[in-house]
Image 1 (tube, rainbow, N blue to C red):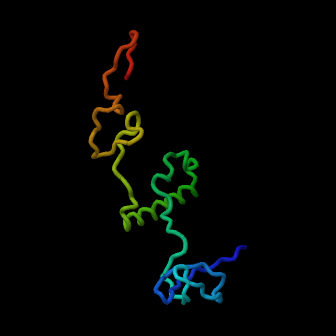
Image 2: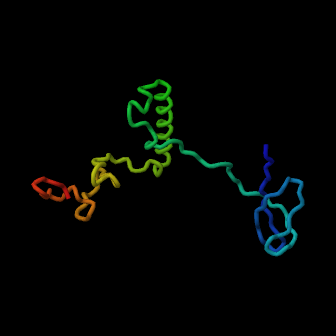
Length: 144
């Protein structure tokens, strides 16, 4: 087991403020790293340990019956619970929801950037090979 070192906030008589890891609460106050003056421990700002985890996104959820273990009851319960929690979180924080518009096309020229409801159709450019008329090459019809 590793020992943890607490972080304390300090201020010197010259007005510099800084944080420092110290061995224990009983350790002597360090000198100011800016000017070398004596320091005093200050009340720390409120900090939350760790990070917030919004849980799995909709993209992480199973997309097929096989991905649910062919309808495994425990897997379905788990994902139902996760997605219900995610729905409540997205209602509270809409920025987590992402783009929920239906995908209209995701293959061919839309493989890199799916076409969603409300998007304008891209025109021209090298990525629109699917919209070019077929050409004939050696008696065979080819695309692009």
